[in-house]
Image (tube, rainbow, N blue to C red; front, side, top):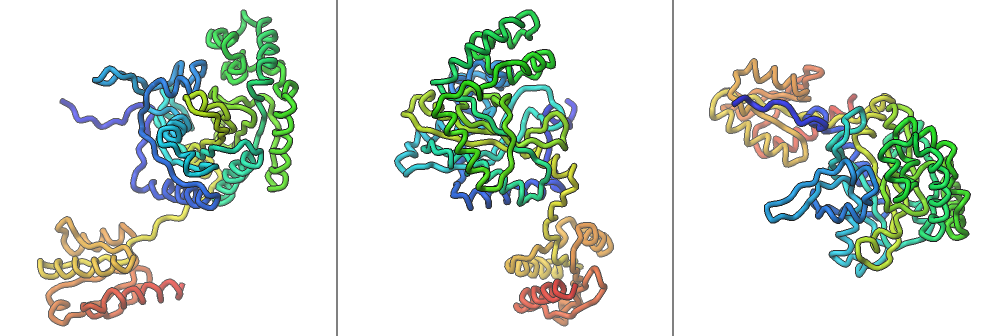
Length: 429
């Protein structure tokens, strides 16, 4: 049997030399979420299939074409999560989180799975940062979650992102809009794709989201939802725009934004970049006031968004944004012989306890190979311990950049004195 050496199509490895970039943007996201009062939620990677059928919507491409669904040995139908909101909403219901006070503010960093054609910025396994807020119908909450996304982009120094917003109405005003769409698209039945023909009766708004060039062209002349909003939705949308202006966040009203999932109501929005081609949406979300009811709970107005990590990294790379590399190894100690190696192991433990990264040989290399490795990992200082150093209980620590050497005792004061040496080197730059 041959060795399996290739990853599954549509997946990517995050290698050690790349993972610091992910860790950096994840740390920024966690920090900004904390500043806005959000706490982390973690949900299972798979859920009952019905959760996504009811929550996401059985007329969406996600449910109809893209879900990884399978039967368990217990004959249950389960699905790998295609998005994070439905699972978070289920957790809110199951654990009665409303008893802890409203609003409920949660965020997640998670992997999602959709079976679709892999391309730049679109994978079958992808990762999202998501915000979920439950228990508020205020337009101020809409502006707040958008502000959180905007603050993350500013922290990451991302430029040329365009915020596009829309209102897709509510169950009161949307049926009138649906009828207008049905009437419009009925004249183009012979030209619509097969998928959009099935959407025509069930959910004509989905046609506005079709990626087919023919359907997209037809949709350009379709009625606009903003012309059909009820007074409540119109006032809500006006207040969202007012709060965004107070926050100094620029936006464009785009009546064609409907988002790809059925649970959205009222406000929808996207942050779009021109730097990564056709897959330019790096963050999208909105309000989903009916989701909790759809899942069997009491009315609980909700909103949130998801931000694609892969796409975000693509934008940052294309804009030449440098992500700080992790602190390199502060000290590499080469031990010559068993006794010296034992001492080296003791000393790097003491150095690590001060919060500085330190390494010693764990492979069994000779001195030359060890020093070559120290150089390869970018060690800032190195030290060699042999019989003479053990006998004298002291050794020279070498600055790998300047070549300067400092003698230190190999006793309990070593780690403290080495830390001072590192600090001095930083200030002398």
